[in-house]
Length: 225
Image 1 (cartoon, rainbow, N blue to C red):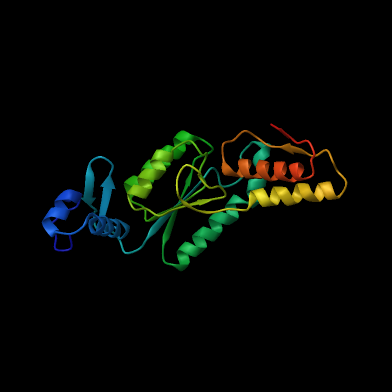
Image 2 (spheres, one colour):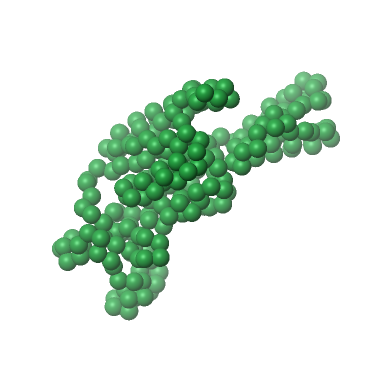
């Protein structure tokens, strides 16, 4: 690739061909391709193979994707004014310290827009992604394509349970447990949990913490949607 014998978008030999031609093990070939992918020399297309990347700039670019930057019109999202924007600010500051650019993608709570954003990230061959996934069940295949392309992926605020991914989250289960336990110890025996039906780890973990605290004291529990 460095000697220009392979041009951008040329297809590499298959793994079996590389094993045969270089007389090495499958593990060696897989690690070599992973390293080339991580360093930006090649990219993968599922079902088609591995291809030579175009010449990359020395400066890295990461993508930050979330539902919205500030509060939406829904009053339930007003807390995000003091939540999401500071996270974006912190990620951008850290990226700048390491000489990287950052692109911000917003999906506005729409799983289809999130899918389009993920496709754009893959097409641009971004060097890394920080994402607040919209849900547990949507666009997992697209996230897996990013992983297959060697693009590092970090989830924030929630952890997708259908795939193995690095994540940075609050311990929502412990937080809910401690809050409910405090109420019980203060003399309240009827404690209700107001939540929604979103299929995300944040909702599940808070509900689990509430149920655990109530169950330990033998108190009836009820989550209200």
